[in-house]
Length: 209
Image 1 (tube, rainbow, N blue to C red):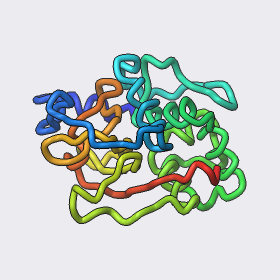
Image 2: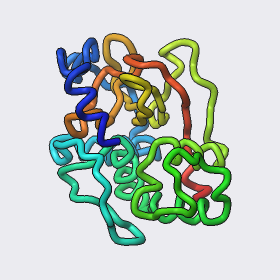
Image 3: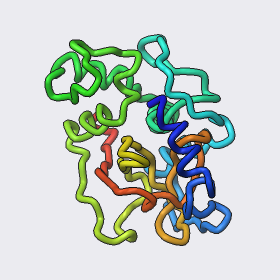
């Protein structure tokens, strides 16, 4: 996770995510008058723009449950973690930790761990993707950009194959719906969904949490 900021500053900062467009050119797609779960989630993620202004993938010891690093910094997973916590009071740190303690072998072994680490497990994209899949939240990846819906979660491979995650919003850019994510310069809403190869699509029914 530490390497991504350096990678993206060198490879993607030439146009602040080349071809990613800007939310200035985006328009909001119609949404229900009363906030839906997707609208609440998107609003909670959008409130992080201008607050989380740094990408920092350093390992941190944080409280448990409801632990967090300072809000002015974080990684891509923190956008989702904070959005679900702020919108619904759901703590992905505790939820992922509980599932990893129950089924540790179901999770990737990319980091050489022999037991769950509640400080960092939920902040790793492969772990979140595994947790969402185990919640039956995985959906087919749309063959057309119009198939993405507000509130969808995407995963992708950026740069030299680093895992990335973000939230699809209700605003539409030049190429697709905008996404809320942190890919090197803090939480931003950008036309970056199709910037890199998509590896997964998820929609978590929070009623099953």
